Amino acid sequence: MQQPVFRVGAWLVTPAINQISKPGHTETLEPRLIDLLTFFAHHPDVVLSRDELIDNVWKRNIVTSHVVTQSISELRKSLKCGGEEGQEYIVTVPKRGYKLSATVVWPEEEPEDTALSEEEVPGRAGEEDALLADTEPVDQIVMPSTPALPEKPQPVGIPARVLRRARFWVWAVFFAALATCVILIGLATWSMRPPVTSNKLLLNPRDIDIRLVNGTSCSNWSSQRSCVVGISELISSSLNTWSTFLVHDKTDFNINNPSTSGKSLNIEFVNQRHYRSQQCFMSVKLIDNADRSVMLDKRYFITRDNQIEIQNDLLNNLSVVLQQPWPDVMEARLRQNVPSQGQALQSYFMAHQLVIDGDAESLAKASKMFSDIIKLYPDFTFAHSEKLLVDMLRHSQQPLSDAALADLHQQIDDLGKIPGMDNNAIYYQIRAVDLIVQGKSDDAYGLINKSIDLEMSWLNYVLLGKVYEMKGENRLAADAYITAFNLRPGNNTLYWIKNSFFQTSIANVVPWLDNFISETE
Image (cartoon, rainbow, N blue to C red; front, top):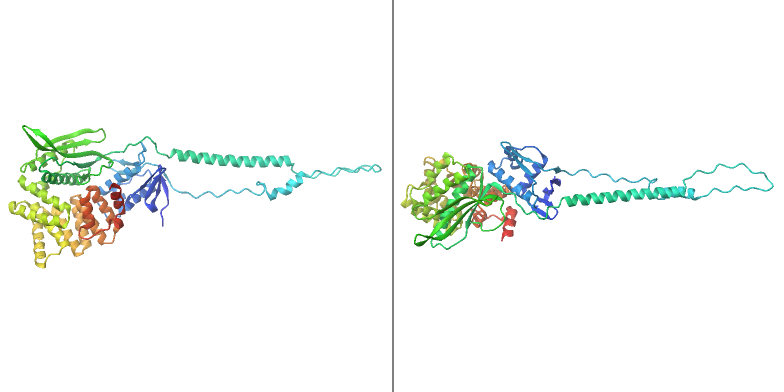
């Protein structure tokens, strides 16, 4: 059954076409956001917990609370479009959930037309009375030779002037009522217009954008860019997994579109005189977009040996300025995954950049680089893990021989025996890719959800979208793909969505993402 049209505050919500509109402005939302808004509208002024929203909107398909947080953020952002200053639609109730604070108006039955009776409307029913009223009584005839007869009683009728006056007042009242209706409709329409001079955006203080400011003035730009991409991915996955911040890694997204994120972490390479020579520095600034204040301002001179120290120092500084202590489990995982030599980390970052690119040529180069890293640094466990992931991805594009595939499965089994590896998301990603290649979507779905519980990363949601596509659930696949693109927007993530394992039609499966990309190009 088609859902009815209703109003939320100044917005007219049309669920059938996934649109919200107000005079002069129309927004097309994702179906999940329309479902979320409709559920809120059915429970106005009721505090809804995240579990209630997952049960009724997501049907428990995606069980992470971060998806609810992000969806609420996107819905708020869409409802604030149009410049309604001071209007708060969805209120966060600490420790409890969310509440729709705007007025909700549902359609009612239209009133029946009030028809005037024949006696009230000038027409045929009144013609006979009018004729009677216009007929003057006949004068009495007096015969001169006969005495006057007694007067007969005169017929009782409505005088014509009274009837004309009644008709006049009926029409006067009718036109007055009509004019009143027109005036009220005009006032209501005028009051719904957004303020013309207001262009403010509501910034979310818990959202952070990581941006790489373009520049190629440094001679070793390529290796340093790989370092930034690796560190940015580590920062975004760490904060998204172990904090209440939602980080968008936009190092691959150079579109200068308006953002509602409350903070920006800008990374830039700059040439600066250092002692007597020009040196290339990595400048890191964390800016509070609410008042443009600088929360963190650091400069690092990157070498082949100091990248581990730079990574640790940057994470510690972010922990202090964001008032976000890192949990012990995160620090333990970093100690397990980060090599002890700075040169190994630099090589790893360059190979990992090729994995993010995702195409067949880049994956082949990445596999070769990881093999070289493992030979030089055999204790670097995370390099083993990523090489297995790359080789399994290459197997999905060009199947290995039976002997090579058996050897790859043996390496995966050996990797799972390493202490603490069962707490790493990449281990479940490798096994999930293997199951996807075999067509075992249900088993892969369980492993991907384990990986999401351990790490909220863009790659996990790309894999989740592929599993949903295999199960024929394209709407849930679209939700997963949009989550992946929000976590790390850009061409690399888009390439993974389109081409990893099997080709995905963006126009058919995720039309909202396709429209967004076409608008930014």
